[in-house]
Structures are given as C-alpha cells and as structure tokens.
Length: 186
Image 1 (cartoon, one colour):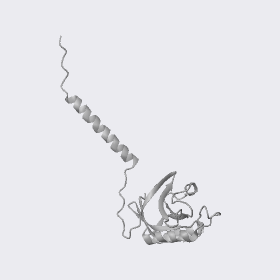
Image 2: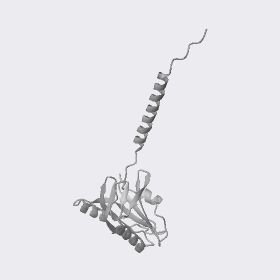
Image 3: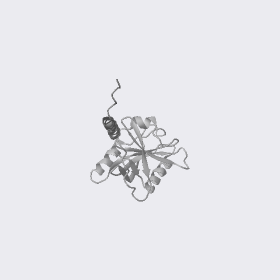
Image 4: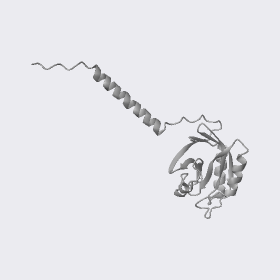
C-alpha cells in the first residue's frame, strides 16, 4: 500500500508545464518508478496524447501506448506507479468522472489543478473499490524516509480489545482482594 509519493521537484515541474501547455484540454500521462516500504518514487514522467472524445473535461490514455510502456517495463526494475492528468479549470481533487473511470486500483492518480494557473496545485490520490484516499507528496531532492504505517482497523480493534480485557482483569482482581463483607449483627 502506497502511503507517500516522492515526486522530485523537476518531475513536478514537468507535470505542471505539460498541464499548462495543453490547457484548456486535459493533459495526461504515465508515472514510472518504484515502490518500497509504502514510498512510491517517481523516476520518469511519460506525457501521452489525450484521446478522449471531449478532452476539455476528461482524459483517456491510448491502450496501445499503455501496453507499449508496460511491455518495456517488463525488462527493467521500474514499474507503473500511476497516471496523471490535469483539471484545466478545476482543483486537484478527483472528479466524479475520475472516480468512476479509475480502473487501476493499485495505481496512483496524480492531478494537476489549474483553478489558479499562476499557482497550480498537484495532489496524489489512491482511488479504488469506492475508497478515495489522499496520498502525501514529497518534492524533496533527497529521498524522504519511508512513511510510518498507520494502524489498520484490525490493529485498532485488537488494541481496544486488549485494553478492555486488561480493565476487566484489574476490576476482577480488585473485587477478589476486597475483604469479605461484615456479617449482620443479630
């Protein structure tokens, strides 16, 4: 599971420039890199043509281009990290169309929001199985440390259950150690 995206500043700049260049149409592309301990590192950005019917409101990557990129990845240590696209007039948040068309649940969706073209926003999202989660982005030149994993629901449940059992044991022990109640006086 990806918890953080390392998108070096020069690659972020490439995404933003591609988005600005294609405006008012949505720009799109492929993110290549590696994943280790929840940290996805983008090593290459591959801009691709947007072949959607209405390129001002949606994007579509040509399946032939995607297959070509994936087949070349089979001969390297890198992998498909995710896809990027722009919102020429909107924020860097997934639209209902983005959510509906997210077909790669293990791939990140990076969105360049050009609502304010003078200050473009870039955000990363994990979209899959009806769950949308924002992913932290690091633009540092030096590799950030892997993110600290947050507890899962089952781990939260286990901690809560352990706490309740410990509390019950303390109460039972305290009651056991109480002196017997005095006998009633006749």
